[in-house]
Image 1 (cartoon, rainbow, N blue to C red):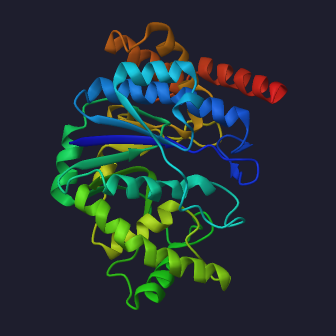
Image 2 (image 1 turned 45 degrees about the vertical axis):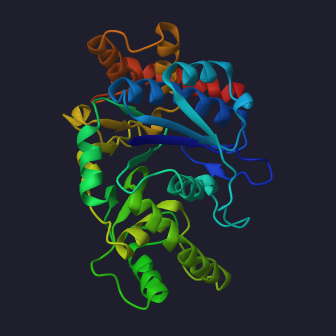
Image 3 (image 1 turned 120 degrees about the vertical axis):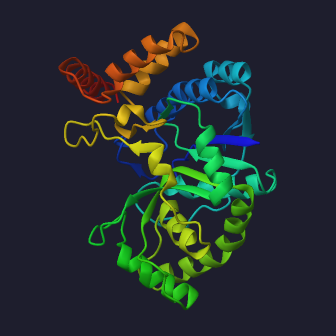
Amino acid sequence: MNYIATWFYRESADEASFYPQMGQRGDSALVHSVYMQIQVPFFRTFRHYNPAARLLFFTNLRRDALPRFLLGLFDELGVETVTLPYERRPPKGWYGAWQNQFYLYDILGWMGGRMKADDALLVCDADCLCRTPLDGLFDEIRKQGSALYEFITDRSATINGITLPEMETFYSACYSTPPRLPLAYYGGEFIGLRGDSVCRINEAYAGLWAFNLARADRREPKLNEEAHVLSVLAERLDLRNAVANRYVKRMWTSPQFNNVRPKDERLAVWHLPYEKKRGLYRLFRLLEKQKGLGDEERFWHRAKELTGVPAVSLRKRLRDRWTTLLMWFTK
């Protein structure tokens, strides 16, 4: 079985942290509505190109708390909703942003009881679009045990509060041996794992997390988010690779930073963090209107225009500016 999963954790006012891409706290109505809307282009595109895959949506919300448009979509596409509590939440004040990210390890814990050893799982952020079938990706997951997205190797960069050399010091202290190779940072937006690898991560997580909590108590550099933990466990469990880099790219399309290059549009999956409130919202409206991709060539032509892949047009810049102004005055 091939599984494709994404998730949304609704934060309460007491636990809310800041989400820079949204410019909001995690308990805001805007964050909630945007994340509900982007599930539509995610599941529409992933189902279109992967008709036999099992699609899963994890959330701490009950199914009857989801918007009607999403319930209708899930029924149509055969998406399984899993209401899952957040058991592996870090202590209050752990880090300033993205405190819901450790929900990933609750998801892996749940999947460990569901998957067979040779099943394949893709956990993917919801601000992604699928462009092609993912059969090749799932074959590689089965062959190698994982498919990870190597995002940062710059040893001077501070990555959400910690550098790669500091992560290596953490690793050596935790396991009483240095990493075999310099660590790389594996992005948490796209994680492919074989069933037996999921179980191995679940087994290794408890000890690493206990050590991480002790580091925090001593105010020593710690693993602040889920991708830090993934990067350390990938080394420890011999799951390191950059297989996912052939399938996905974190594509920034903002006026301040744009890393999209010609031919990026040919990748199987586009990760579009800047487009949550922009291009993906407009695709949500389009897909709700036509209830499917329709003519594929026409749909992807429109998707390119709306998301700025591979190039941001003047029309899109003006439309995005107008959207930003509207959100500023209505928030």
